[in-house]
Image 1 (cartoon, rainbow, N blue to C red):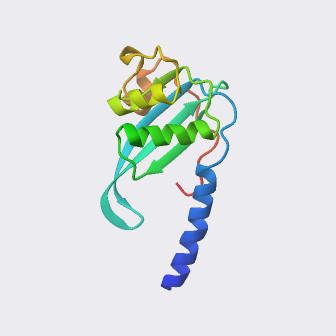
Image 2: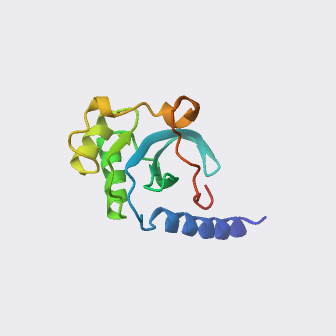
Amino acid sequence: MSSSTVSRLNQKIYRHIEAWRNREIRGEFPYVYLGVVLKRSWAGEVRKISVLVDIGVGTDGFRQILGAAEGQKEDLEGWRGFLRHLKDRGLKGVRLIISDACRGLVVAARLRHIASTKCGKRRYLVMDTLLNPAKQEAAPKQSRSEPPGL
């Protein structure tokens, strides 16, 4: 495959990914899982990259990936920008944020008014509960939609 063909295909794929990332968030998501996935390779390059991820549980009980942003740091500015983008796209109705309680995330969530200002450290759960639903009493239903190309 020629390099121009690869480049053209990448442009098509990234257009779809960007459209998915910027789509409107409809409905309320009372439970939001926020975390970071660390990748060792991205776009054919071998290097460490972090991907901020938001998985929401809607009022219908279904999980949905609401957002993902690669290359962001897990600090106040990274989380603030990510949460601002989610809120601008329509994220609302958040009652509980479930995460590893990263200090930057906790402060950013309060600054962006994503969840109740009464969400103290004891209300932030470990992200591992998302990865091990067998330990949960009532695990959310499976996602109905997945992002294109991810």
